Image (cartoon, rainbow, N blue to C red):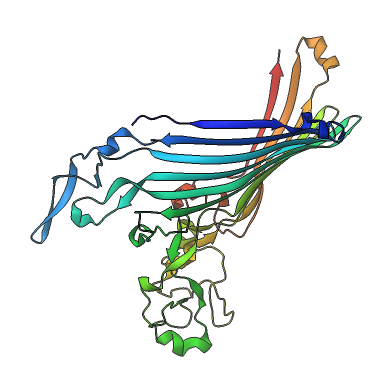
Length: 397
């Protein structure tokens, strides 16, 4: 599919205007406005084809392999996703650019998203790519840079970034109705956690109420949304989305004579994940596996999050629902540049000796190995070595 992709961008250097020319503390002020429309076909071209593959068919009471459409059906009518975006930005500088930065606001609407839509296997395939509905992304991005101290042999500089995004489905099939089978809901993000909501653990004073659900004290207590004492998918609800509320990063750089020190910090706040690691090591078969050190329920402690060891609950998947909030010191680097007066004798321009440590500190309630990859499979999380150190020398002849 080919087409014309229009765009327009406008900029206004407000600092050059007469009414701001005499404002001494303001060194830069520029307003930016833009609009554009783009297409996206960032998928392999063969998804439009229906291809033969090994499929399993039932003949009588036995199954046999034979050639069929496999798990996916092609779609010859598939078209590009089309995105229209409005952007407003402001660049600024103060005090001879001791403080600089930019603020960007965006509003992005995408039509005809290319989704793999799940269908019943009775059709002979499990999914098909389709252009489905309309989504909205809107948010703000902020960047700041400052020279906090610049005196004699010492400087301290800071860079800060901040990002906030809100995503929601506007429509799916033109009828403003949810698609429950694919967990797509109007007005909600594309990816949501849709499951039972845990209220706690059944305590000893709740034994009679637990029995109405076929449960016992020490088992997981989930919410009966419709109050019919039958816990099923009618009691599922939207618990959250893996999308964070906001993310931020900060870099601080200090220099003193020949020494330099850099510290990088990353923060992610909010977001709910269905985490396989948390589920495997607190919930699944928890009387046999080597478990994480969490407060499992006992009659003495009355803990209200993790069920009793050996409690065979049908609702242990709720223990995989985990917040994605964390603050991480990503990198600390200390360096020393050998003075030029010394290097002149050995005919070398620059020599810098440095040492760095990655991921030395993480502040989070997450019980897995690294909250930055929360939601990944167990084998990925267990293979990580999050704390690493590096020592090096950089030469410039």
